[in-house]
Image 1 (tube, helix red, strand yellow):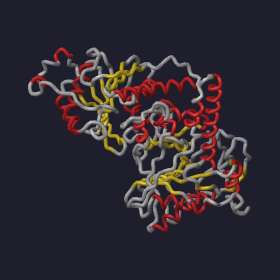
Image 2 (tube, helix red, strand yellow):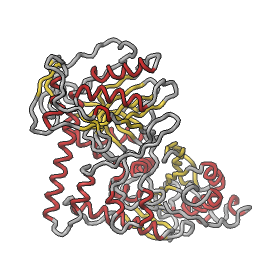
Image 3 (cartoon, rainbow, N blue to C red):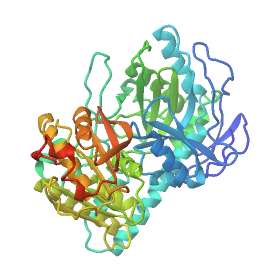
Image 4 (tube, rainbow, N blue to C red):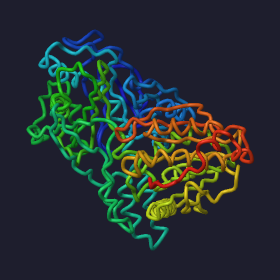
Length: 563
């Protein structure tokens, strides 16, 4: 595979290829790469292999998205990039093609958590009968992959980050007196060293870790002390990582002989920019595997180290190689994001802060229209209003909460966001967003004055209780029905207390009609987003409705609603 300029455009398949890896001005090495056989391996079927670099410079990008919002993410990719997405059998992942000339566009997506460039896909990989055969196949697989184009894309992605950082540093110089901006930019550009993962051994003996803990800057400033214990939220997937310590001492001089076909690859991958550090992250799901994620990562990582002579490092790595195994599907890629994109807006976290990617998915379900008034009556740290104000600037967002600490965190998050926008040199005349403190059961809003209600309701676990939800949910639905416009009003409500919500909906059926349900995974909890449509019943007739006046005289409202 011959790779020319940094744009990633390829000419035609050849055995001899040109590799550019490492620094922008690094030398170009010519390497002989072993051709991948069309037929099956000894114990594994390669399956259908999709070319990663076409003649027009297109590559396949994989993205992890909130479980349940795969279709929403695919719609956003089609809208912003113009590429159709393929939803993986492994929930929470989509794949799409993008031109290397427009690689920066993938970082503008609002519905994705992490991004990676696909090295190779094996839709129907056949694992060996024994563990030894499977692990040996994984070792051989590392040397048979087409590494050049994905590494070129990885380097191009790094160069885009560097240019972005340089532009920010320039704008910071123009704004004197913002001493804290450089530290903030350094954290966002991924220049801060990743926090080492906490390894615990379970029955499967797979290390469990939190992949992207918030940076130290999130706990600085006027952030309340109790928020520090919330910086490690449950991850949606079981991420397993393994470090090859016994191979970490391999020196650059210990390269294979010149007769080895992989010598130039190792030189381009290590010497042109100094010895790179790497780690392998294995994500495995399925019950019919004879091996663990730790074993797969160890064997595959050892083969990668033999191939490139990179140094293994679990915390200060330059390259993160992903080994995703779902049943009999194997996808290998290189990570393009160092920190999950769902942390882009929040700096002051609460006990149940909603991820920005989930907030965006809920907003898209409501299909906001220009000039819509959108209210989050239980906004918590204002994750939903902030995300909406940034993406749907033609709408007006109003958030509120009954908890003083939650309102203060919301205000701090908005102020931090405005400060970042100012540091980037953008013209900031404010966001179409306000935050107030109120009672969810007695909102200070006019009747039929709101177009959309969207909120993350208390699950009854970290905040409130299941018992209180039986009174809170009907009261919330009633008040939401009062402020929402009849016929055109709509709501998107997230909850894990599904039984209580369905019961409340049966009591408020004269106000709301359920139009769609999206099943999502929130921190390992099986939750649902209910998309509701306001009925045509006016509020003048609400108090005279038989369903409300017969057996339910007054619904008390007593529950903590901080998010």
